[in-house]
Each structure stands twice: as C-alpha cells, then as structure tokens.
Length: 431
Image (tube, rainbow, N blue to C red):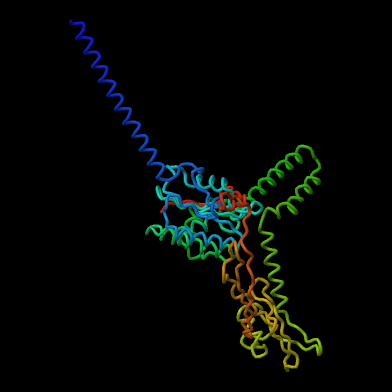
C-alpha cells in the first residue's frame, strides 16, 4: 500500500514538472516570436533586406518603414530623376527606422556597392541614407562624385539644409533641401562654404591634414624619396670617390636640379619675377610709332573719355582692363586691352565686346520615359542688352536594363543602377 502511494506521488510530481516546463517553453517561444516580429517591423539589419525599388518599379527611393508619405516619395523620386537627366549623376535615397546598432557609414557603403549606384565608367553615384534610431544622416559618394562633391561639402549640406528640417520630423523637406544644394554643385556652382560654419568645422576638425591638403602629402612623399636618394648618393660618394673636385660637382647637381624641385621658394621667386616683368613691361614708357614722340599712360579716371561705352562696360565687369597711352599734343592715342582669361564673358555677336554671357540654363519640362523634355538657355550682353533665348529638347529617359516580367496580359518592372562603386567617400553624423 505504501509502495502504491509513493508511486502515485512520483507520477504527480513528474506531471507537474512537465507542465511547468511546457509552459516555460511556450512562453520562451512566444517571446522569441515577439522579438522577431518587433525586429522585422523596426528597420532592417542586412542590406539584402532593403528593397531596391529601382529594379522593381523604377522608384529611386527606398522607404520600407514608411517614414515619409507616398506623395513625398514621388516628389523626391521626381527630383532625383531630374538631377540625373540634367547632370548625369545617379542618386539613391534610403530611409530606415533602424539598422540594429550597426555602423551607419559602413552599412551605407556596403549598400552603395551592393546596388552599384552610378555609371560604371564614371562612378558618379551618391547614396543618401537616413536612419532614425539611432539618428544618422549618411552620404556615400562614388569615386567620380567625390571629385565634385567633397566629404566636407556633404557634411555642410547636412548641417545647414537637411538636419534643421529633420529635427522637426520634416524628413521629406530636409531631403529636398539637400538635393537642391547638391544639384547646384553638380551643375558646376560652388557651395557657399565661406558662410558655412559646418563646412569649416568639418574641414578643420574632422578631416586629417592629408585629407584637407592632399598635395602636401604628395609633396612630402616626393621629398622623402629624394632625401633617401640624396643620403644614398652622399654615402656612395664619400666611400668610393676620393677626388674632392668630383665630389663637389656631384653635390652641385642636387643644388642645381633636385633642391629647386623640392623647395617651393625658387618657384615663388620665379612667380614674382614673372609678375614684376609683366608689370614693368605694361608700364614702361612708349614711343609713338609714327612720330617717335614720348607717350604717357593716363589714369583710370582720365582714360574713360577715350574709351567707348563697350570698353567702359568691359572694365566695369572686369572682362578686359584697358590702358590708354597718349602723346603730349594728343596726336597719338593707343588703347591697349589686357584680357582676363578666366571669366564667364564672351564676345557679343552684336556689339563685339567681351560682355556676353549665359544668364541661365533651366529645365522647362523634365523628360520622362515616354516623352522628351524641354530646356531653355538665355544669353545676355551687359553692353548692348542683346539677348538670345534657345529652347532645346531633353532626350527621353532610358532604362539601362529592363528587369521587368510579363504574364497574364500585364507587365511591371524597372531598371538597375549603372554599376558604379565607392571607395569610402562621404560623411555620416547624427542630429
């Protein structure tokens, strides 16, 4: 009887333990499932999880966590295509809730190279990656883009134009503001870095000296190479050549040929010598070729009455600077022009003065995949007010690689990126 009771108690204990273990296992599985579900809805932890919408539906914005509205996606996508159509640069925009504590810049660089943003032969791609938790704004530039859009410029654009909107949760507005500035740079204009505290801070504190001044790094390497050659030559000369006269001339080669290359001072002297000669020749007294009379140069105020309206305009806009030389009896007058070769002005087809320039070049109607666009250029003369407006066609957008599929009477698809790559240019920071 006692044996039967003992067996019954052991059986009950086993049943109780089994039930407790089962309940614990169920709770653990539920917790894991909940964590997995939470992670799935809270950003992406692998670049393979980021939808490449350009390949599927020809949208260059990836917004898997619905951080911005569909209308905002369309506005940004339209701007991206407009920039590529005008400048040739490919830009992708990705907005994510989280990347699970991964390094934002490394994640963006891997994503950039995985997708191949930019043309393969130019590497002119740009990725703008926005992550909310923890906050990060990352720019990844292709090898070709980096030559035009510097790391410091991307940082300054983020600080001055994008992050102020991000801090108010206006993510779409911030991205559009940044794209407008990037478009300006891609069109050949400069970012107003002299007014950007962010640009100066980034340049002075974030970049190392050799990133800020790469020519100094090259110069230092060349100096080290020649220094090693000099030391080696000096040792060989001392150990193998007894004739002091020969030693003298061997070292003189360094004085005459090598040291001037290493030291910038001789070239600075040549620069100032050249500048002195040009200034001297420009102001040396002249003799009138017909009579041999001495001529003297008029001052800036005196010379204007001998200049035409067009020449005065050229001086005002600094396309050409004029000197007027005149004889004592004013029988002989020379007007000599000194053209500034680096400026935006060309010869006007109407008045023939160096006062003609391109006032603007803008897109009137962007091109699409179904129709060409329209652009307009305006040329204007500061002197005679002659203007010329040229309307031109912008070629239709083309899909480089149709990845669509068809079946059941319908089709969908997009185009892939151009196969570009990045070597790590860009910037990344929070807000």
